[in-house]
Image (cartoon, rainbow, N blue to C red; front, top):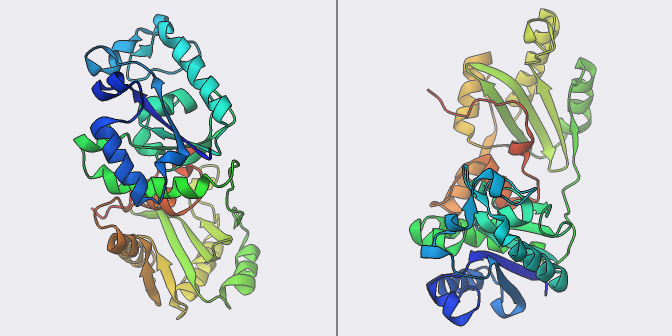
Length: 336
């Protein structure tokens, strides 16, 4: 089978039938799978725990840190899955090995904990990664458990979009990241070279900025999905934390940015009203040719879902969880 779906544990109906995803959660899962174009009969369904926890609460399989299974983080703050249930993880690993799916879909925090050793489902859903726990080396995509959707119905369209992505990813077993060339830490000569080679003749430019307080820390230009230029302004290693150390060079860089943004070339932004306004306030530069906004385009398609760049990347791209890879925090795009 190409796809394996893993849930948390048996509920009342699952315990009676000794099968995963039957009863109300099964009906909801079926409807979402159908909407995503996935045939449930062609998927393998199981749970991390093939039993019903006491009072139907997963915390009853947990204890203190000293009781926890070695090598696994807490399932919830201060609560570690007891060694008593290690046999369930061994059984789950054997199932994954036997099925050998192209993709494992983790439905909820518990399944993600078992396969990835992580529990922040809201931050990691929709991202394709390789399993590191239970049975390492299998491709994993995490999304919300149907039981969570019953408690928060707004999660349903997000889960359907994740399952649509799962259908695509289930066609092959390896992770295929987009190949991109990104120019970082450029010299002034690099900026002119990139502009001449890629920007002056391109049909469209994607523009994005990062900010801290009232300062633009960097601006990026991408003429195609495969190549981009990042122009930094903040550098913690530089004198005064400035990337461009002398005033003449700084003003030359700003003038080049002014030239790029003043061209009639169509431009695409994410939350463009924020970026365009911020650029004008920070540098006095007017932007021309602003045509599309990915945040607004997505809102037109899915008005009930999230609209951040991180969310859009998880739905529409094959990128990894880049927000979790970063070591330094930046200001959220919010105009106070």
